[in-house]
Every structure is written in C-alpha cells, then in structure tokens.
Image 1 (cartoon, rainbow, N blue to C red):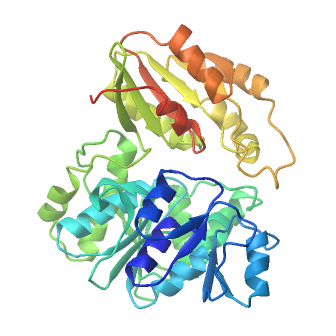
Image 2 (image 1 turned 45 degrees about the vertical axis):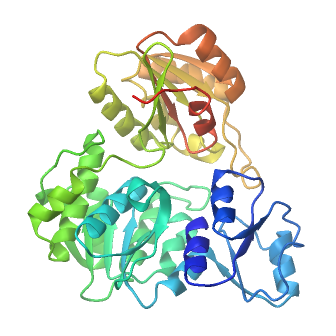
Image 3 (image 1 turned 90 degrees about the vertical axis):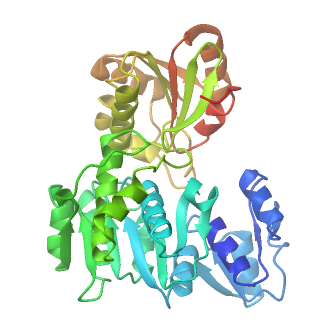
Length: 416
C-alpha cells in the first residue's frame, strides 16, 4: 500500500490515507507530502476523493469503506489498483510461497545496474531503492512482487513470471494445498501465449504448476549458484531465477553476475542489526513458515559455525501454526536455544482455534532436540535474554512476521 501511494504521489496525484498508529513508514510518507490520519472512522476521507484503495485485509464493513460508499467514491483493492497502474507496462511479476521480496530486490538490482531503469514495487525496504519499497523508472519495465493471498495476483497480467516455490500457505483462505497450487496455475495462465515462467523445475511443486498451466517453463536450475554478500543456499537459488531473467531480457551473463554478486539482502531478511554488548550479533528476520525458518537457520549456522545461536520465534497467526504444526516442531535443529513468544494474532477476527503455546514449545524441544522455552510477551522475552540467557559471542536471531522486529531493535547495537 505504501509503495503504491508513493508512486501515485510521484505521478502527481494528491494522496491521503490512514493507519492504526504512527510508524517510521507513516513518517516517511508524511515527509513525502502524503496526508495520514490515525482515526479510521471515515472522517478523514476528503469528499472530493476520486479513488479509494484498500488493503485486502480491510473488510467491506470497515467504517472507511462504508464512508467511501456513501460518498460514491470508486473503490479498488490494492492489487486491482496496482494492476490498473501497470497496464501500459511490460510487467515482470515475482510470485511464490517464500523468497518473493528478496528475489524482487535482486531483480531490481539487475535491471537498475544494467541500465534497464525499471519501475518497481516490492514488499520490503531495499538498499538498491535507497531504502524504499518502490522506484519510479523511465522504461517500459514494471517489476512487481505478486502476492498470492486471497488470489491477489490474479489481477495482474504479466509478460514474465518468476516463481520461487509453491509449497502452501495462507490456509485461512486456501482450504488445501491443491487449491493453493491451483491459484498459481491460474496466475500462470494470465501470461500471454509467448509469456515466460522462470522457476526451479527440479522442485516437483513448481514443475506440476508449470505443466498444468501449459506455459513455457524456463529452468532456473541450469544457471550457476553465484556467491552473494548475503548468506544462504536459498538466496543463491533465488539469484538463479534472476540470472534466467537476464537471459530472457538478453542481458549478458557476465553483466548479470557482476550486478548480482554485491547483493547484500533486504530489510528483515537475515538483516544484521549490529553488535550488542560483548560481541553479541543481533539478526532480524521475517521467516514465519517452517521452510523459511530452516533455510534461514541453515544460512546463519553456515556464517557462524562456531557460535551459540539463540533463536527467538514469534509464531504468526494461530491458523498457520496449526496448519504446519508438525513441520514447525523440527525446524529448529541447528540452533542452540529457542525461545517461543506469544502468537502474533494478526487475524483474530477470522481465527477460531488457538494454539496451546506451552505444549507447542515442549514438542519443539522434543522434536528439534534443542533447549526450548516459552518466554511470553516481547517485553518479558527481552528481560530474560538480557538478564539470564545471552552470553558473550552469541548470535541472537529474532524471527517472525509480526512485531518481533521490535525485539531486535530493543538492543542498542554498534555497527559490525
């Protein structure tokens, strides 16, 4: 939403919006001249508004949507609005269960460094975009991160798709893994007959989706695993997708490799915040799915093979935790200590079943064979870490898609 708002402001429109509370993000939007209200009762909507864009998370009964209806304002969901904005461009869409933001950021770096001057919308802050999550370019290329939640990506009509993986998520909406995969099949069918889908054809889930879509699949696995400035096999695999994109766009391989090699990651993707106290490395990461957790931990263990790794995991939604319960239990094998916080209840209005967090913690200890404890809310967790757990030379990995980033930021750090 913030990237879309910023782009529309850049295109010369008057923009206003609302959020539940102020943040660094809303501060930056206000600095750009966007008016923001923090009371979402509908009173902040200007009566001469011509378009009201809402997040997929905002129900039709929300006061602001009701007010927009009263005023006769045209309404569009965020993906509908982004689709409309990108209609005149050649759209490159990055989709997948995991790795979308990192892969989009890599692709943005490739296109910028090789002079393709793209417009970009991505789901995280990116160094290559001057710390923003958007960029206005002057070419015909529009690079977007395409989210599958509620089939949002079905509004887009790309010419090229990069698909990182397709192993299932968002089961508060998708009722089975088959229905989840079907959504990707339908998205790939949005490609024109000569459109290209780039993916890892060694991944059976991805191959099945490509075959079912009847679109041309380009196998990213045929490209080399290049060394990047951010760790992890999964990051190298993401870069294979971008090398394949370079091929499709006729960017020479040596230019593409040179552009990608300095890639150092994005905000909250194995982001090293700095060093706290006696050489304690603080890392903030967005992983909230078992496959992401395993990949991130493997990368951090590879970078710090001799250090003690303390992982604090904030489960993101009860629904996801229940759906992947058994997979979560074995996801923490390569760390030394795990702290499980309270669940970040992002969808409390649609979730009816609750995780027994203490039983969940005990079973992780058993299945992952690692010291595990339930630490409660973030404030209590911070106290336990600082007073009883952290030791000189430790690596603290704060992991999850909710407010766990506040914990990572609670440790005053110096640059590494």
